[in-house]
Length: 240
Ligand SMILES: [Zn+2]
Image 1 (tube, rainbow, N blue to C red):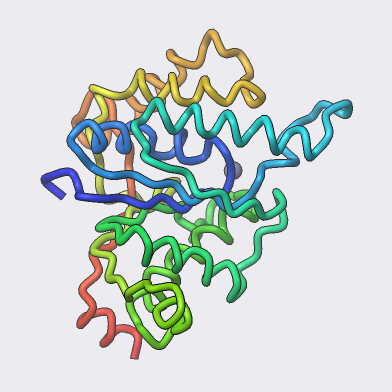
Image 2 (image 1 turned 60 degrees about the horizontal axis):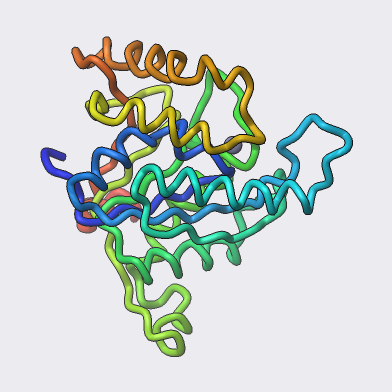
């Protein structure tokens, strides 16, 4: 994409995943006028090694931290689905929730985690959120025959997403120059205070990772994605 999209919706499993995976890109795009929305699937209530911390308290803390991080990147709103951490499943109900947000916000681009990894293991919620996002985009969100009650009773319309950007992919094919926002990315990550180890090294670590990705694309700092351009006609042929 040689321009920032009009709108982007991120389907993200836990607090801080979006900032770590694509915070630089989201920041670049919102600077250029893109409307960005997060759909945060879980409440992150298991993300602590402190036995004195309770899950309800952690969920509250992490919701606040996510709002603060999203603000740094110019994200317009965060939709909290609040599934328990580690218990996100690829169910019809979760797909219904994500489709509702796609139909509400009508994003040009959807971003999610690449659920298809073969050389390393990832968190279960990451795989589930990626699968739900991909299926929600195609075929569920665009067909009026999926979740028709959203159209008949909630006033929503079917929506065709143009492109999917998957972060965390083993096979990135698209790189975004984040030179202008690599420090904003680190700043947004720093807002997840409860998750921070060695906060004093965060900026340097974020820059180093972005520089390593950038080397593959001849860019000073970058984020990499596996991208799918959605041509409905072509997808139809592939699907059927
Ligand atoms: Zn995560």
